[in-house]
Length: 168
Image (tube, rainbow, N blue to C red; front, side):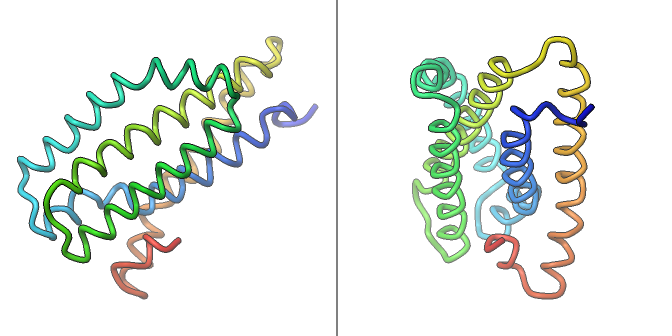
């Protein structure tokens, strides 16, 4: 009996890689924003804008994901995440103004697209007889990768410099 249902392997690998890459950077985002001139209040508003935007777009994104499929939603999620990272790089390079709000919107789109795609795909392909085992395996692989990422990121920063986690 395989460890994971074959229909779930691709989504597990895709989301684990995205979450590992995100965890390399995302854990340090508030510190990066503080270091680059944003106030603690701005950072709080960033997360509030993110949460409200995700709330507002989640249902329309689910409808789009249902219509066009999980693959299209995952691709759009990666594009949104690239936009998020580009906003972060711009802030590091001295950009000011409203870019922080575009960054929050890009993160909201990224997460709405990714999680809706994952949930839709899993709901369509999961084997009900082994659903608990498969969900546990998906979460375990993801949590292991995400748990290691901050330490790896810190090591990269120490050895190669502060920008390197963004390039990986």
